Length: 212
Image (cartoon, rainbow, N blue to C red):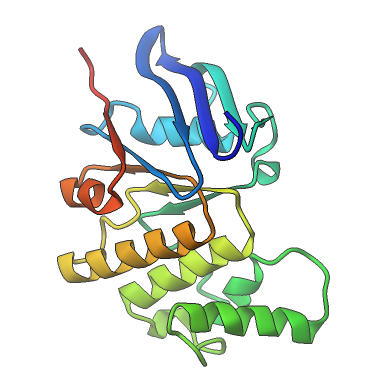
């Protein structure tokens, strides 16, 4: 399939009960939205893609990233970023120190600081590097979490109900920002959500999961 994220003949079950069956390719900059009620395996699918599937589940199929099979690679070597509904910022670190966690080891302190400042400027948070995350609004925290993930230079992005804790106006703003920043980097995006507006905003293919 070449560039992008491919889920090839993926099938996930628990206790012999099939949960997810998916065979899809997501090209660079494209979005695949997976919808369905709680308990049908949406987050389980993302866990399989990231390599964090609990042992209670069984899975077959392949995860291919830019044509490379990463199905059995450890999570930190897959090159896949994920955003959750909680921002998961480290409360004891400044905004800049949180962003530094996304950077690869090495490089001068000045170069790393410049990367952090550029990332903050990209999401209209210039000058926030020394701020305490506790002083940020929900939308600002979401933007910092996004840039921390993007600084790790992933080759695909997963969204696990990433906007569900934000109010309607902020949700649309942050969602548009996430799609814009990811698509500017030509990242394939796999999003799971309960929200129809998320799917509409993504403007891509939609897969419905549910027990028959």
